[in-house]
Every structure is written in structure tokens, then in C-alpha cells.
Length: 151
Image 1: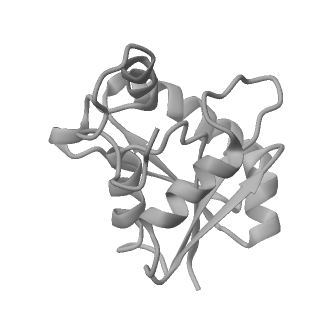
Image 2 (image 1 turned 90 degrees about the vertical axis):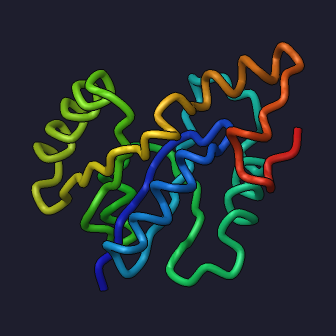
């Protein structure tokens, strides 16, 4: 069974995240959406709320599992049996950033491959940072997040 890990903070989950995960399901038997928990990072939404939103997005979808983790992503891959890490790319800047991380992950765990999935053109501008800013200023986030995300 080909298992991929799709790691992120998902603070909050966006339509871009949802699209990448659904497209990854076309490539892998199982996709673990892994919500990283970094104690030094300040999140807008609690971990359990982020998990609930993602679980609601994929309710009834076979092959998706939502989990949380602390520590290195490659260590979590080993723990879950994931041989692949899925990352979405919106632009060249994302690629440069993600390439370095993929190379470091490869150095730490040669048996874990990173697979990049480019964003759909209509979702390129959607990211959690912008969505959080819209929330802070009282704007409507509904065009950018799954229906399950209610703030």
C-alpha cells in the first residue's frame, strides 16, 4: 500500500490544501493529512479545531486519515509507514523553499521521497496566512476555505 504524508499546520485548512490532498489520493492508496504541532509557533486556531475541520472536509472519503504529530516529519513518516511526503507548490518561491526541505528530509531518510503537486491556477493565491489576515479584519473567507471551516 502506497502511503503519503501531507504535512502542514492547516491554520486554517484552505481550498488549496483540500485540492492537493484530493489529487494526492489519485496517486497514493492512503494519504495521511498530518497536522504538525510546533510548540514555538503561535496558531490562530487550536489543534483540535483544525483537526475537526479537516476531518469534516474528508468525511466519508476512503483513503484519508487525519493525524497530529510533534517533531520531525520524516520521523512521523517512519512511524506511520509513509514512504512519500506530498507538498503543494503555488509558485517558484514555494519550490525553492520546499526543495531545500525535501533535500534535508532525503538526507535524514533516504527511503522517504517528496512529491510536489502544483496548485491549480485558480487556487494559487489562496494561503492560510492571507486567510488569517482576512479573518482578523472581518472579511469573508468563504471563497477560500472548505465549507466545514466556520469561524
